[in-house]
Length: 304
Image 1: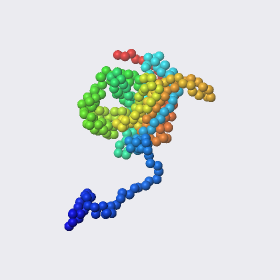
Image 2: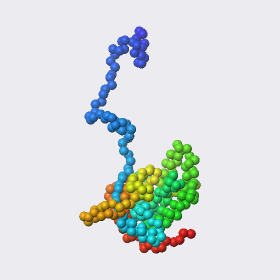
Image 3: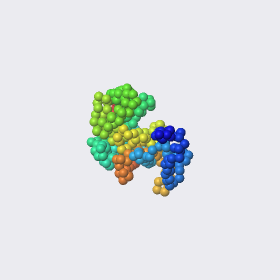
Image 4: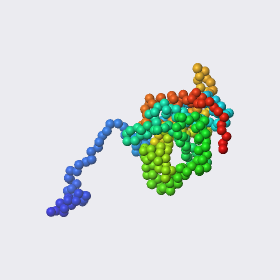
């Protein structure tokens, strides 16, 4: 056996001149139709995957004339009612009108929730952290009752007097980041998908209710869109902007009206366009005439 024959048995060795004359298959180039991406489009294609997010975003402006009149009447009676309180009550009204929204999803099936609960996001620790209050059976409570409940429970949150929140925060803050991610996934599955309680950890079933409401209006922000985080397990998150006077067309005339900007982030897995439209009509109908859906305003009870 020649030295070249011995080297030929080692395909990575190319020192033998005779091996260069062997036919080596060349890599064929696959030609595709279309233009080759260049510049930023090429970088963007490499940086991001295709969309797989079911979120739908919507926005509408509500004529706040009747809304403002209702709030002024409530405050004259001693009740502190804000656009956020009324928006939460309107969300409950919309969920009652479209029961398909008030469900939890599990294993390809929709399970009706036993009640319509609205979660109000609140700032705590002087704005350095976020928490919230779940108002149960919000469709059966007046806007004044919702406002009073949020005021009482919100003060307890800000003062650190909520035992469930304290247990949950203590548990989460002790976990290292890799375990925290796993714990959040597991907690969302148990409390959100299965609707079970874990009282030892301060975790309650369906902690974020049927839908969520937050506000940036009191911060002077006109409007925005809030992210619908995967662990919420709700179909809808409504954000209330700042109500301000704007020129609008009324019966062919330009008038200055108080306008309330509302944005919504919706999970498309729960509903389609027809259901969203029906819920929006119920939502708008309530906010444009809240007094038509609310009981007569009575004097506020003195705090004990």
